[in-house]
Image 1 (spheres, rainbow, N blue to C red):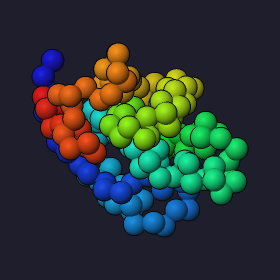
Image 2 (cartoon, helix red, strand yellow):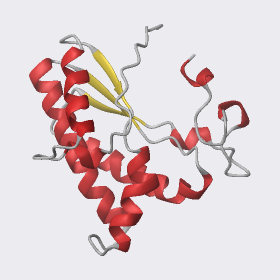
Image 3 (tube, rainbow, N blue to C red):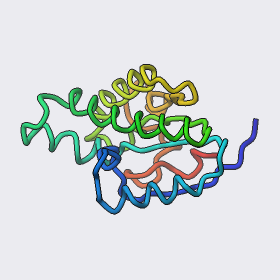
Length: 163
């Protein structure tokens, strides 16, 4: 089934920014963007790359969490709670896209994070919250590298990904 994809960006958003009481500007922007989505829409949510690239490892290094897995558990709990609330309040169906393993230095963290995210979405009490787990399929099965056709500039997915 063909769908129209309307990008609604929240540049710089970490899942961590969705925690209660956070006043960082990206939280405000997330709320603005979310409020502009029509009720009963289907939404594809893809957040967490910055958490994987910057936040999780830093939190472990500072001793806040004992492992990337524990840090991932905390942020995915925040994320799924926020998205679950939106599904109920706005009758949205939210498809939670796992983090794309674009950056080679982050792939191990992304794999751990995506496994935790899958468990968090499955455990959420929000039937209209569904996981779209395609990150692993983006990698070459032999080399473990991002598939060439998905590689835009060594940092971002190629725009052909959404075709």
